Amino acid sequence: MLDFPDYVCPYQGRLLAGVDEVGRGPLAGPVVAAAVILDPDTPIEGLADSKKLSEKRRMALYSQIKEHAIGWSVARASVEEIDQLNILHASMLAMKRALETLSIVPEFAVIDGNRIPDISIPADSVVKGDARIACISAASILAKVDRDLEMIALDKHYPEYGFASHKGYPTKAHLRAIECHGVQDFYRQSFAPVKRILAKK
Image 1 (cartoon, one colour):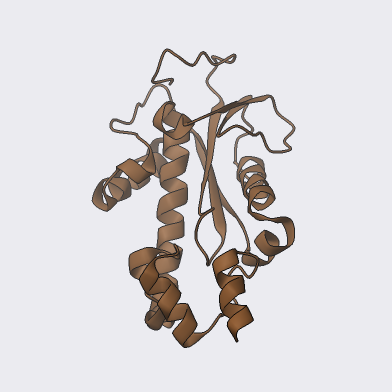
Image 2 (cartoon, helix red, strand yellow; image 1 turned 90 degrees about the horizontal axis):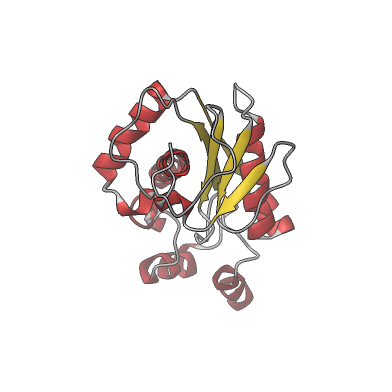
């Protein structure tokens, strides 16, 4: 299940969960995390960091992961939790929730990044794990596709903000839209660009 020999996982059994999150940078919406236990007997070709894949390829892999994984889960931390806890702690909370809501309890977890959430099972953190370890790549794909779909759904209700294109990230067009149309409840008011716009009002 491990793609690259430069990382040696201390656990080599079947029930290895990969965990990743997406959505730390956007100004709006939740941070979304996923946990995936891949089946070593049913490898999925083409897994990679979700950011490096085309939308079409991500969607194809998204379906394959859900169909063939031993277990998978997607969880969130809300805008309110992000503003209350800060984005780092909210990300840890989302990853913890993803692990804890797996239908099968993993025996070990590998977490993308350099921090490990407060979880009850043994775990290791792996910097750039989404590009190095298959089960983390799978988690990054589930989390990104789910979050992108949420932003596309939000765009249908608030088309003036352009969420279908920028997915909540602070593009120039997005910042202009917020200044023009205001700060809605789905914005992270603790984030500096949103704070500045609120201060102007």
